[in-house]
Amino acid sequence: MLNELDQLSKNIGRLIAISGQHQHRLRELESQLGHTRDERDALHAEIEALRGERDALRAERDALSSKIDDAQVRLNAILEKLPHSRTDESQLDLLAPVTNTPQGDAQ
Image (tube, rainbow, N blue to C red; front, top):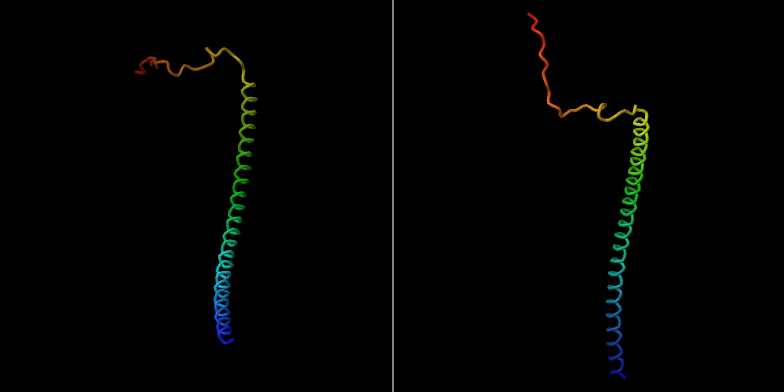
């Protein structure tokens, strides 16, 4: 009987040690889980900030595109109002050689 009690005592001691190890490992895992949740929350906040920046850039792009479209419409309206004439006569020949016309002597 004493031998059985000694064996039972050893088994209880091992169970207590195993239980302690499990409790310690559980606390470590809970701590890691907490850190992981904090990282996840920080990443979600960063993602939301980036989405906000993206949306602001899209809005700015759309506004600029609209301004460009409006400017094109106004430019086309101005060009339509200009008199239509032959392009040969109405355009300057900027590449033509410059000829100096002699001025009279002012003596």
